[in-house]
Picture 1 (cartoon, rainbow, N blue to C red):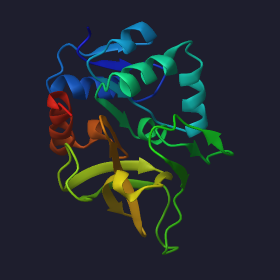
Picture 2: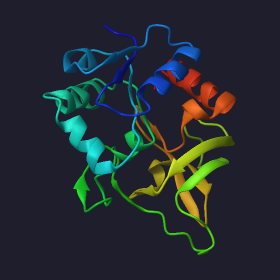
Picture 3: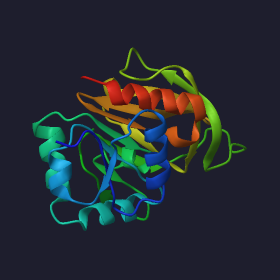
Picture 4: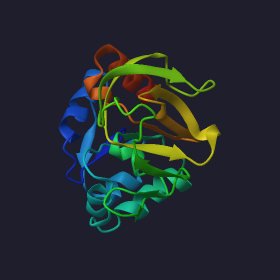
Length: 205
């Protein structure tokens, strides 16, 4: 059994997320593209930056990887964290460069940010407040670092764990069962991000 695995499918933030997890206490974190390692992991992290389609295509291109993720998370209830586009891939679909299927773990669609105020620029970039929706696991109110042009529109408001505001409310985190995803970058969010990762490492959902 491997305590924590980061899935390596070529995501640009892989090593920065790995470094942040080590700072948060995951000294045994393993980077892997081996579905067998993922299938037996104690907890799993899926990083991601860039376009939804490119990330989903890269993940799907690893034979057996999505099946291993479904086995670990869907069947065994392994704690799972998706970061940025890694969170967005949890959705049913993404609409960047056409409509493309996601993992479908948390119902919803990833769509272009359309601020109510035309003076608000896209992408949503920089530090912004994270406000909790109810009492979600792991998350606290605070300031985190964001960089994204597309956002997760959850079909069920109960899956929205936290929100931020950028010309209107945007989902900052989603959660369901043993799955949590954050739109913000914990690896760039200094003390707030490291505290969040530390709580994930101790999470027993």
